[in-house]
Length: 177
Image: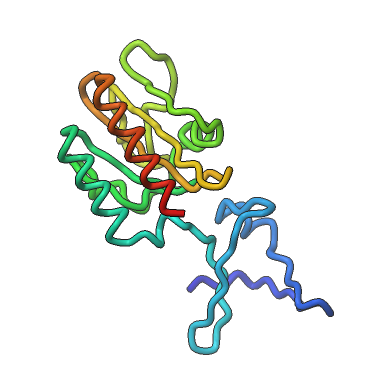
């Protein structure tokens, strides 16, 4: 665990202010859910990701979709890749999403970026050299909130049949909440 040297006091209502530098580093925004737990004698705060709580279901859905459409598939929360299957997938799990992908998820509309589409969204993660000719992003919306999304990366153009399967998978994922 990294010490920051920042000390905060608990106020009379039991509140603690999380410093701006830490909120920025962890991409915490106002109204983001935070999980609170203890670890021995430490009080820990963690950005809550409902997608991360799906465990075998999320991983299995990701694997099945990748096998069905023959592409690299990633299931993401609002910030990073949670599950991934297909060629090169083991290198992107846990990496932060490209800001353009985050923006697409916030728009709540599925988007296809292919050879004819201009834009930086073809890079899925913020770090690394992972760029793809075709990227399809299908947000998962549950109860009016964005809980994550399904991102498919391909070296070939994605057919309407494949995008329909991706949309169906995103809908199934959203219905888990």
